[in-house]
Length: 523
Image (tube, rainbow, N blue to C red; front, side):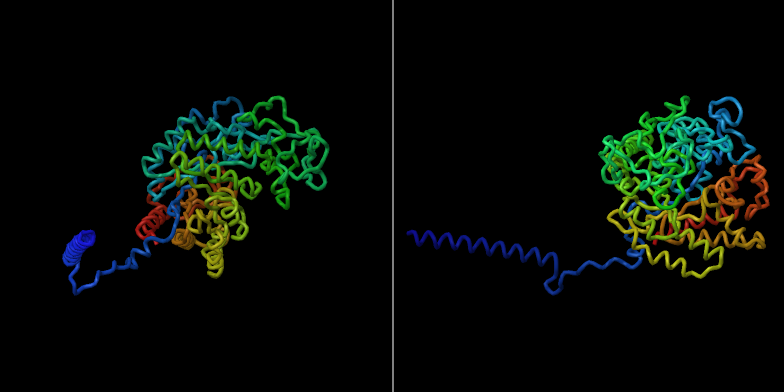
């Protein structure tokens, strides 16, 4: 009986298997004819592959760089920054290229359509934080934004924090990102010393001592407390400026290197005062954390899209690794996975600037090597080997979050001078037609190369200038500066005595066309 039961169970299983097989066969017959094998999916077309290169998120931006003081004056009531008196107090003198001219955030906001018309996707502003209005012997003002005393508010010459929020909101509404130019290396020149000497004193001759009088390596032994009497120079803060800086920890003289002025050679590049500006002791964990908190607040309160960082090569590499990582993480927690940080690393050698991406964890650097190569080819008549040499080293920028596509490319800037100035210098006898052709060629080389191109405000209007720094910082609105009025602009008969927001200028139209070409052909 047990055997009969087992046989009956086996027959039931066999029947069930037969039914399952029949159903499977029917399903297969319905899906695919017995005579035809399943068709594999087609490979992607060449066009699809070419249109989708292996890039990270922020690799198709088109930046417009602007000094707010030099772009548009939307509110004349803030020209003097709420101060009264002479230019040595207010910093305002529209006849002098070294002083505030009157541009502000309201003016910039009103001209967003002009900026957008170039194809701009990201506005990069020179620092907008509160500056010491005038420094030194009164020969220049902080119109450029690099003499910061208060890292928490907008300079009154430019407007208010609310004006900044309005600008960011309206730029975002027009599809443009906003980037801040930020500084971690130094503050305004407030500190002096009792010795009244400013030549650089090296670490070898004047080592830092801890509270027990022992020399220590501040790059490794960051937990050592320094003996305040052992600084190379004895720091001193003028009585009127004891609390001049914000946040308050910046008023502590032990947060600075106190080694005298940088010669920009050797260790002084990291430890010396940049043209007298108070050089922060960035090796100290208190300074790293302090700078993290300062800029995290701007990310939180203003919905900005990224930072351009000043004087990166004048700060130790460990600082960047920690600071950039912290800012990336903070932005990501707030839903900003595409937060983008690029740095000014002044060198035409890719092997010098790439480590700030690979080791320092920045997303990109300003591409000084490519700028130098484009000028060599388009303006100086050098062979294309300079360009190929730069591109052959693109592998140096590759990390888990970056590659050469991230690099921020440019033709000139507010420090070194404009592309128009270089063209006139390289071709002193050339007529306007030749200069215009070469200017267009330079922009074509930049736009049709990898990277995120930058237009420096005024280049699209043919601005030139006699050189760098103040000579490259002309106003877009009508100027009263004699040196600027003498400039011979490219592609126009206009002078700096008139406003320069001409959307019909040949360079404006060329740049807008290049922007459309890039957008239509992302490869």
